[in-house]
Image (cartoon, rainbow, N blue to C red; front, side, top):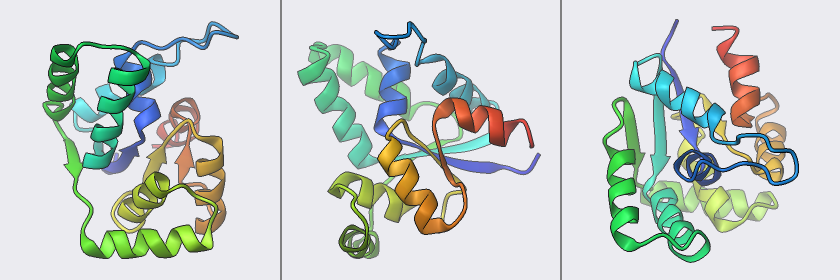
Length: 159
């Protein structure tokens, strides 16, 4: 299989880190991100996120999940140690592009940056944000953004 590159959004990483379960359905939301991360570890996929995603993860774990700082630091270290997984730092060009994207599409600043970083460098975006997925797929005129489960079903099965 060719090496497919994927950008993991904050929500997918938090699903995995916090072993999240959907309170309404009981679905284990962390399982699909874990499978994707295992594919990254063995080199079947190249994984990416951004420094801004890591900052957002720190915020969510601290404020919403009430994790202790030591556990958060250790967790961020775990993310950074995943083989074949890189943390991207937005360039000035990425930020200018993100601004243009945000003026053209109804995306928040974070998703505008993530989309900008991913556009020409990454094959697929993995997210649970249905609005983000829909806007990216509409803008690209093809499916490039998926939930973790849909990515495993639609993309990984074909590879």
